[in-house]
Amino acid sequence: MSSTDAVAFWDGVYSARPAATDPRPNDRLTEVVTRLPPGDVLDLGCGDGGDALWLAGQGWRVTAVDISAVAVERLTGLARLRGLNITAGRHDLNESFPDGRFDLVCAHYFHTSFDLDRARILRSAAHALRPGGLLLVVDHGSTAPWSWHSGADVRYPTPAEIAAGIDLDPAMWTVDRADAPRRIATGPGGDTAEVTDHVLLIRRTA
Image 1 (cartoon, rainbow, N blue to C red):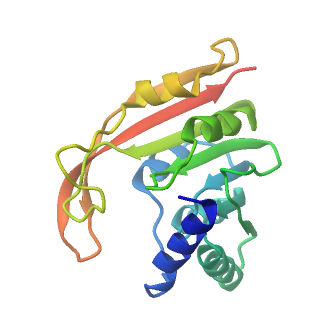
Image 2: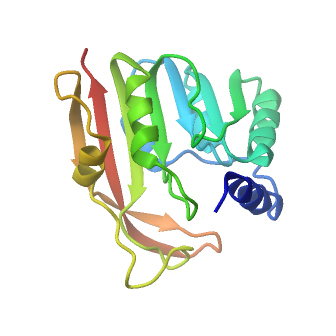
């Protein structure tokens, strides 16, 4: 499907539901970032904006992008209401990558049913890091009961497989973490279930 289809789909997803007034950050983000000094961060696929708002509240200088203009406009409004300095913009990562150098790049549940060259995008993210900077990739490692993507044929690549696909020079990047922790997640209807996250943390060393 075309990029136009993807834009229309994701704009439709956000337009069809009420705007989030207090979106929460992802668990793995807070787990990893709480121990880090604030700096410049890029949030890939910001969605409702929970990660971007939390990061800005912790003192990070946030750049947030999403393919959906609806999501970006809602995040911009929430940031303004809270007095937070977030640079949010609509961006099709299949076509280009945001400018800048960052101490942290986050990509949480960066999945889509549309064509997306994830490996190339994540490689660009790694190259956008300053020395010492971190790329945090958190993917689904299991199917929740409320997931859009269900079925016995769904396979989730391991963090090691994701790292291999990004194919970074080990002289300049190192894998700090590649594991599959479990947690209790809450679905949109309030149901809970144990799910697995695939967590990949890559550090730029040079």
